[in-house]
Structure formats: C-alpha cells, structure tokens
Length: 461
Image (cartoon, rainbow, N blue to C red; front, side, top):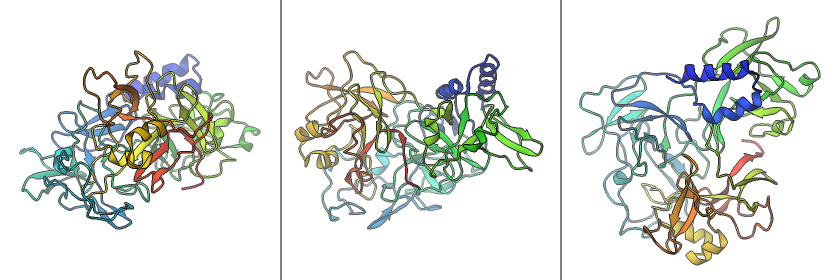
C-alpha cells in the first residue's frame, strides 16, 4: 500500500518531536489502515475510504459488495456461498414476512417506482480477459453472464454510489475483521456489506467497525489502550501502574515487527505488542468484551486503526445511562434510522431516495406530519455545508421524506450521516436521555431507530 511508508514516517516524526500518544491517537483520522496484500484479478483495486477502511472496488472505483445469506425468523434470503446470485432483473411486488410483524403477500409500498434487485445492485460482471486468482472466483449467473465472487460469495456494485470510493450502499458497522459473512446481528436483515482486504494486525487482534472509526481490540473484543506517559516503543508502566493495566504480551515465538507493529521487551524474555510505536494494554477493571471503562482514566486512550471523519462542529457529546452519545447543539441525543425491506431482494429503505413508508410506520403510525414532531430532523445551521466524507447537508421535502426539488421553498436542510438524515426524539427532555433507543421493529434492527453512540457500554457479546 503506497501510504504505509508515509504513515510510518508520520508516526515516527511525531514521536521524535515529542508528540504524546493521545495526540497521535487523535490523528488516527488522518491515517489509513494498513492491510494484508493478496492477489487481485484484473480490474479490481484497493481504495482507502474514510468510513469503511480499505475496500475493494472495480476499475471505475465503485465499491464491491457481498449479500451473504441470512436466516431470519421465518426463513432466509441472500446469496449462498458458491451459488449463483438470486438478485435478478425481476421486480419484486410483495413482502415475504421473513421477520416482519406483517403477514407475507402484502403489496410493497413502492411498486410503481420500485427497482429490480439488479437495477439497485448491478452485478460485478467479469471482463472477457479476466481470470480467477486467490480468493477471487467466477460464478455464472442465471442469465449466462460471469460474475465475480470473493471467498465464494458473488459481488455487486451499488446504484447509490455516485462517485469513486463513495460507500453509500452498505456498511461494515458492527462487524469485526474476523466475522464470517452473514453473521451481523441476530435480527438484522441480510444487509449488503462492502468487502475489503484483511487488516494487517497480528492474530491476537481484530478491527471492529464502529460509528467512531475502525477500533482495534483483542480477538475476544476486549478493548486495548495506549498511555500518554509511554515513549516510542518504550513502556513506562511500572509496578503501581501494573496493578490496573495489563500489557498485551506478544508470543515468545513468531512475534515479529512489521509496518505499524513492533515488539518491545518489557523485561528479559517478556515481549509486548506496540501499535504505531505505542505499547498496548488492557484495563484490569474492564467488565468484559465491548466495555471501554479504561478511557475514563486520565492519560489512557482507546486505539483506532483509523478514525471516522468528525461530526459537524455544532454537535456535542453527552453522557447517558448506556454510554456517550452524539447530541445536537442543545444536548438532545442523535438517532440514526435502520431499515431492512421485508422482501425477497431486501432493497434499501433507510435512505431519502428509497421508500419512506417503513419509517413513517414506526415514527408516526403512517403519518409524516406526526413523524416530523416525534422524530424531528436535525436542522443544519444557515449556510452550513457538508462537513466531510461522512457528514453532509441534505435538502429534504418535509411532506415526503425524499430529497427536495431544486429551489423548493419549504425544503428542510438537515444533517445526514452517510446520506442518511439524523434525528432527535421528542420525549428526550434533557441531555443524556435515550428513550428512543431500539424504537421500532425487533429492537430497531429491522425497522427503527438507534442511538448514535460515540461509546456504548455493552453487557457482553
């Protein structure tokens, strides 16, 4: 990866001039994640993205997605490993009741304008001169065309991605770098997932996609930390420090420095991992996987391989009963909307360019006016522009929930994350309240709202 050397030089230079590990950790949003190189077929390349880490794209820079089969409460959908795509050019008109509270056979809300699966998710068709290599294989579609597959699952691009490297069609959020395809969430739909190379981390670690960034953890999801008082490749955690912090030890045999990773010797024969020259630790008082209590101790930092672009400057952070949340300028909790279309092809329904009937059902009993009151959009300040690759300002028609027309007088200019508008909740009377967490069908996973957590306290995984 061309920028690996640049990243290493950046880190080394920062440490040489005395920059603390906290400052370096904050700069994770300016760095790209190192990845494991593997053979690529003709026409496929790796692109570093701001929100999903390194991903595979086609020659035009369009991200490649998998749709791994997911077994839901009343059946399953998605592609089987090693099998031809079930995403075809036939328009779906009825729901199938996979996990919906509604019976199968109902007419879908957007039949008149609904796309076929293939229109929304064009197959990654193999060029005439391309050959399979490594994890890349070719599977013939039912229409006779050859389609790329990665690790046995056929691949698609997304009609939602309008420019190279834009990842609007799907996300890795909630996935760890060693999770098998189709393992995301018990009641979550069979989402499309952008694929990419494996992070270049030792086997004791994984990288997890969160709303904050690409977080490095131990393989068992226990958080790892760095300490401001450590030096470059030098641990200053003494006997008193070791009562509450445990060094992440490297194996005696086989642990080698590479790229952003180094192995330091704490004492004769005792080796410790360091990432970007900062020794790694776990917190003794951590309750288990998913917790981040150690970050409450001054001078200790959660580790990211890269940070997501920051929210707009008028947003705030608030403590809640379940962790630290993103909030608007008045301290009201920010929510994101999730939706999985209850149809065989499970097209998108969480974006303003997709049907809004699902959202109106859970936020207002089918009334758009009630939804505007119950879950109001987060309005952008006058003159606000898109902040970065993750955060943008969208013009929304308040009567339909779709994009407003150019020059529409009553358009709402709202903040959006990955082109999905964000909301507050009318019953959150004061900062830190999260009364709408998991509001909707199946705890908000199929159709509903989730808190935009900057740090979520889990009870285990």
